[in-house]
Amino acid sequence: MNWVVIDSEFLMETADLSTVEVLSLLLLLVVSLVVITVIVQLSLSKKRKTAELSYPKFSDESSLPQRKSSADTFPKPVEEETEIELRREEEFEVTVIDETTNKIVTLTVNPHHTVGSLLDTLIEGLELPKEKTYTLVFDGKPLDEISYNMTLQSCGIKQGEKLILTH
Image (cartoon, rainbow, N blue to C red):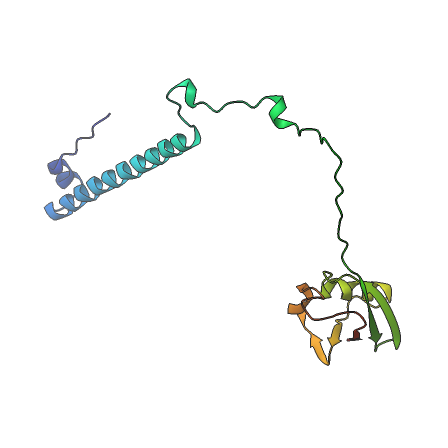
């Protein structure tokens, strides 16, 4: 470590500074050194903590994680066949009346389809201009942008319901 010696009389003579100014400069220098030292110590302690967290230490070999054998990682063969019945979502039909083209469209949908996906399918299937904004109306109420992420089931749309497409 290198030490810097500052002679206050030398500063007062060469820089034409008063005693108060010299003492202020010395105090500022000491405070700056303390702040730098604290910052360095904090950064070193953070690095040590990160290193301690990143690398686990084991006191003896018995605490080391055990490697699984290949028999543990592969699934065991099924001894008897079991039937798994997959329940298919019940699809239903909805009717959409397009007010812009006066067309009536019947779609087969799933209750977990979203209002937005239904609207996109209609715009694409009817070849409507995509730069326009369209709205689906159900039960006399427009389905706003918030409902676009909702499922048909959560909006109460069921088999045989009629929707209106407007712009």
